[in-house]
Image 1 (cartoon, one colour):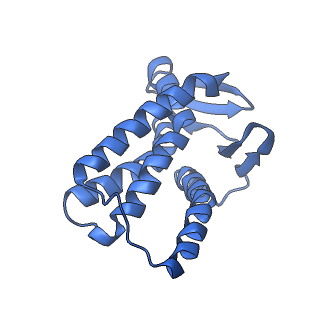
Image 2 (cartoon, rainbow, N blue to C red):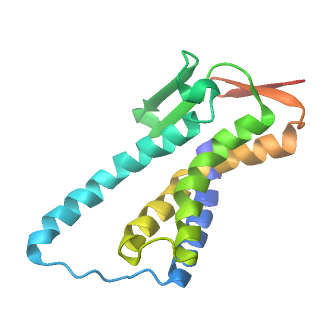
Length: 171
């Protein structure tokens, strides 16, 4: 049910990020020789698993001990097409929010800022825009979680997920 609410939000954010990349003037046509077509197709197909793994690892680096703890779990629910990074212990509200926001900030926003400021080499802008925009869509559940935490849980609280439920306790 959460995904039904989250997907339109993710689509809107992805369109906004894509439009921002358009303003940066990402090359829309790439010149390939026929010998490069296979390489591009392989890169295109492999980009999604790479994006998913990096996205989930960015959630994990905010967990205690940078995710190197028995309480950190990274997994997939193929039937629902969901991938997740979960910490089974309590986290402060701000750390929980940082964990939710980290993939969007690092994969979607940071490359856009780097391209706008001229730090990102022009040769990388197509792929940066590609990963940035798709990640903005894939992070739809994260946006939903951020809104839920921001509007319903006091700042001085610890937060813990158990299955599909989120519990909080004042500090």
